[in-house]
Amino acid sequence: MKITDIHMPKGANRATKRRGRGSGSGHGKTSCRGRKGAKKRSGTTTRPGFEGGQMPLIRRIPKRGFNSPFKMRYQVVNVESLNAFQANSTVGPAEFKEAGLIGSKMEPIKILGDGKLNKALTVKAHKVSESARKKLEEAGAKIEFLTR
Image 1: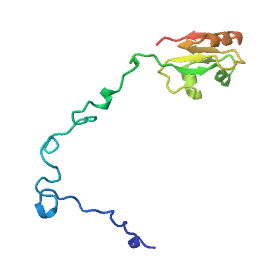
Image 2 (image 1 turned 90 degrees about the horizontal axis):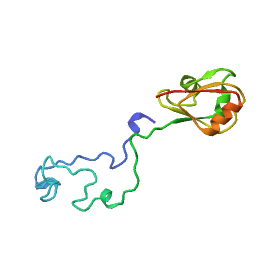
Image 3 (image 1 turned 180 degrees about the vertical axis):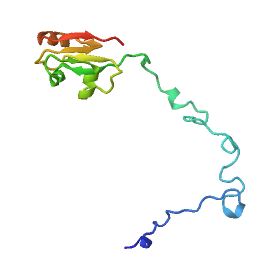
Image 4 (image 1 turned 120 degrees about the horizontal axis):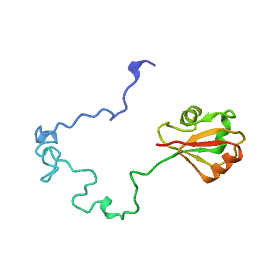
C-alpha cells in the first residue's frame, strides 16, 4: 500500500457554504440566516443559557446551600503514614511533600488519627485531631503547631 492509495471517505470533504452569491447557489438572499430577528443582524449573539426570552433553566431550578469562598481546606496526613519516617526525626511540610503525602507545602496540614504510630517523632502541622494527638502522645511524639 502506498500513500497515494489512501483516500478520504466519501462525503468527508464538503464544499463550504458560499453565502450571499445569488439564488442559484442555494444560499442567496437571506444567506442562510432566515428572516428578521437578532440572529439575522450582524454583530449580535445571544449569551450562553439564553432561551429566547423563556425563563432560563438556571433561574427556574431552586437554589440550595452556600459555598463559602473563605473556607479553609486542609491537606490530611494520617498517623499511620508517619511510620515511613526515621525514629526521633522532625517531620514538617517539606518532609511530607518529599514523601508524597501532601500536594503543596504552602497549604495547611492536618494530622488525622487513622492507624497507629510505632516510633517517636517531632511532628510539625497546622492542626491535629484529638485522636491523632492521643496516639502521638502514646508513641512519645512531640507536636509543634505551625501558623499560616
